[in-house]
Length: 221
Ligand code: SAH
Ligand code: DHB
Ligand code: MG
Image (cartoon, rainbow, N blue to C red; front, side, top):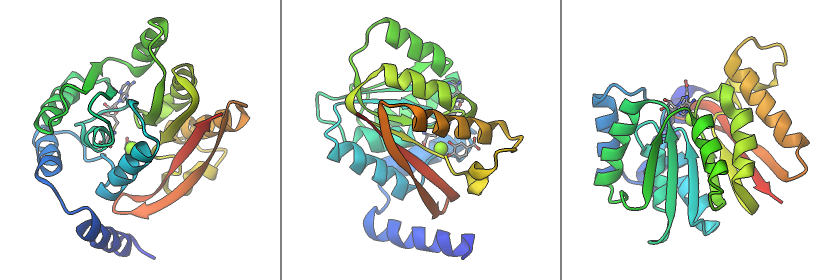
């Protein structure tokens, strides 16, 4: 099995089931024009996130790692009209591109993009006793994942679903001696999730246009 084949199959299913729409195409085009790296989720992964959040009837969604707002738009599509999505981004420029993309998608009133280091923003949400989130998507710097999990839990309720992107990393996740800080971050994240009595979950490996990776999916008991 090769990357070429994974991409062709992704193209086939995306063409069949999630034909491109103006708003998402424009979000990617403007992210690219703005010099943002092309590390957004794939369209079928975006649809997967939307379906997870919608089937969970999520009304409050927290996203850690906005980039240009591509995954944000997919997730916002799962929200009811009185829903809320808070998305956290370190880079001011990424956040500016994202806000425009989210505005064009018609979600400005539901989505808040918060700029700053996610740990700081999460701590301020905890300090402000923010209402718990129903669904959390973790997709920022991989080194930060363990801390993001801890803070996401502080902003969760029984029944909150926590999804994390990029937890397989070409299979490197199984290497205990990896020197790659991102791999180490993801490994610590999974170890923390495994040892926390409040969580149950698993990892689903994925192949596709984004290569070989996987989603961590955890339910707060
Ligand atoms: N979820 C997006 C992709 C996010 S890429 C999508 O699928 O469309 C990861 C993002 O996390 C980048 O925009 C990066 O700037 C941001 N990031 C990196 N470190 C961060 C930090 N400490 N706090 C908040 N965001 C961070
Ligand atoms: C990277 C980050 C991501 O969130 C992703 O999905 C792919 C790559 C990165 O930092 O390289
Ligand atoms: Mg990712």
